[in-house]
Every structure is written in C-alpha cells, then in structure tokens.
Length: 240
Image (tube, rainbow, N blue to C red):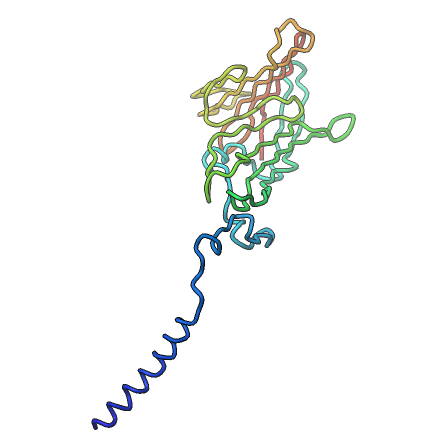
C-alpha cells in the first residue's frame, strides 16, 4: 500500500517539476516595452456585426428616437389650409445606419448612428419630397456604449431643424408643448411644436420659418412654411 502512495506522489511531482522548469526558462516580459500598445495596434476590421468595434457605439436615446422613427410605408394625407388641396405623402425611407470611425492611439474603432427620414408625395410635376430629414449621434468617442440624448433632426430641404431633443428652446429654435390640438376635427394629445427660423427679419426677401407639430406614434400632424410674403400650412387629415 505504501509503495502505491509513493508511486502516486511521483506521478504528481514529476509533471509539476517539468512545468516549473518550463516557466522558469521563459523570458519575463518587459512591462515598459512589451505592453506599450495603443488602440490603433489592434485590428478591428471585422466588418458590421463582428468584432469588438461593432459593440462600441454612440446610439440614439430610444425614448427620443421613438418620436421620429416613423414606420416605413406609412402614409399621410395632408390638406393645404389655404387651397383645400390634398397631398398624399408616404414614408419612402426611414433608416438607421452606422458610421465607423477608425481606431487611434487613444480610442478604439467605434461607430455612431445616423438616421435618414424621407417622406414623398405625388405632385403634378411627379414624385416630390415632402420632407427629407437627417439626424446624427455624437461623432466623437465617449464610451463603449454612449446613449445620445441630445440630437437634432434637420430638414435638409430648408436646412432648418424640424425636431430636436431634449425639448428645450434656444436662440432661433423654439419649442412648445401643447396638451391638446384639434386638426380637421381630430383631437391630438401631447403635441410637440418645433419652430425654427433662418435668423432673418420677417420682412427680408429670404426670410424663412418652419413649424412642425409632432405626436409620438404618429409623426407630423401639422407643418407650416413661412416666407416674407406667404405661408403654406399642411394639416393632417388621416394616416395609415
């Protein structure tokens, strides 16, 4: 019995001794040189959906984004307040896309989200844009997962903001909250009004002001475009 114990000790001892000799023979790393690396030394070029870099991103705040994320193919029928003419607009594009930023010595490869919203309508001159919006998250690396709750949706047709978050007023961009608003016989609750101008006086030939009324879960229920000598108001009749 004792000989069996001795044999077991040898079977355990010899492999451990061999491992100890192997580690002792290894050269110890020079901490100052061997680990002098930066984010740009790593290869994060795995493409969308793969690798560390795709998980490091600046993303839209989900609560704020839900106001402008109108479902694709949703249609709206708007009435021109002055002429009574109807325009049938539909969501032609509503895409969230990542933009990848290469790694540097101090930041990893990361991405930030952008959003494109396009509503189009049929006119006598053909298919025309009713609204073309673009929004972008912060383009600077902040953290592994940065939730951006401070962004603007700009109408690229007018180059004026038509929605922003948080809901505050500043300079040429004024926000108003409306508990209720009745349009064409329909009462809408919790309406968010965004008014923006290009900074010129109302009497200036190039004066421009836009006002957009948004309701969460629906979209734009009213839109006003004002120039120095005219105003065009679109009122939502129905949607689906």
